[in-house]
Amino acid sequence: MAAGKHTKHSNQVRIIGGQCRGRKLSFASADGLRPTPDSVREKLFNWLGQDLTGKTVLDLFGGSGALGMEAASRNAKWVVIADNNRQTVQTLEKNSRELGLMQIQTVFSDGIAYLKTVSEQFDVVFLDPPFTWQDWQILFDVLKLRLNPGAFVYLEAGRLPDIPDWLTEYREGKSGQSTFELRVFQVAE
Image (cartoon, rainbow, N blue to C red; front, side):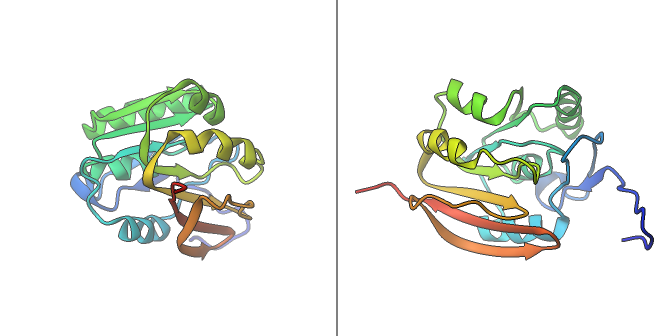
């Protein structure tokens, strides 16, 4: 990172694995947008396994799209990237087209509102909201209905919320101001 008090964010992230490895994504600045660093994404996809063939994926707070596009690059069957910023969604659409990742569906919506309107079930869910976002308990209530048994849920925040018992810890880490965890959805017997 460049030295100095006012370090400029490059507004680019690099896909680190799969068919689009090395390709760069450009994105516009938006409030609260802070892409998951390469080192964290690399660790996350090591935990998930490098190949997501056949998996359905939800990137609920799309932002740069790095997590969802990384999953698509690694052969996920279907990836939904949702964001509530129209310009961000337009950029996500442009990037997914340029990368040839046709299994990506972008959605202009608040994450909780989106979950309340769909019936799809997901195998992998990425939850990386802006640090100031606090509606975790509402999110968990609607998310549970959208998870396949054994689904992985990735959470990243400045401070992780209280997490329901039905999401059991699998792996955890810390990077800069972010704490992140990968959890597994356990269906009650």
